[in-house]
Length: 262
Ligand SMILES: [Zn+2]
Ligand SMILES: [Zn+2]
Image 1 (cartoon, rainbow, N blue to C red):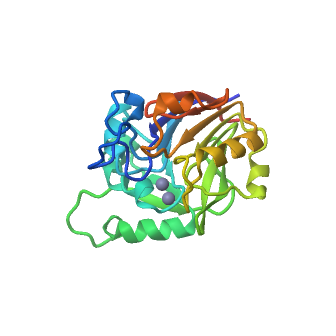
Image 2 (cartoon, rainbow, N blue to C red):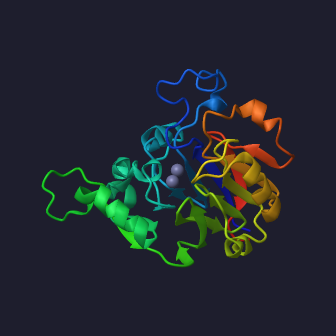
């Protein structure tokens, strides 16, 4: 047993909910669970804390969850809604916070390349203006050791490209997929808590629907499934009432107990 908590920092799709300029009922809902910042989760165990993705709402999320230090950030892919908060990691990379080392970031080569080009200044040794996030980017292939954890990248199909989700112990986080390959399904065997992309009901070229994710959830067979990366098409309470037991929409601030050793 390695008891841990996963906290949903953001459960929304790329534009967030409410969406700028939208007049729909969900964008004007009084239910706080209908307010969805950009997708990210935080995992805490034994005095450690890591993130999966750092999106454009990271600053607000970190203040809300009172994040005062971080051990690492794992990236799923290089899309804006998953990486644009990298600059806001800055205060968590101060030497007095990290104890001197740089904050490690982990990503596959394609994603690392996007991060290096979008945040060129962060990785520029000749940058003269100070105020940079002190990070170090590690390229990952297969499973790797992070602190006392075995982290398993799980390939998923996101439209035309392959990106990754992550499995750690009995927990898996698969955001941004349109399909999960059979080989990846095998990597998810025994998972008890799983987060799945479920954008809306209407088909989308790069994201899963509620219906598709219900099938994926049934195949994985986790005790608890949470849908995330949710658009303004899905009202929290009304949608939950249509979901089977063990499947629920995630919401910002949701905390779930997991076991990182299973
Ligand atoms: Zn996304
Ligand atoms: Zn994406």
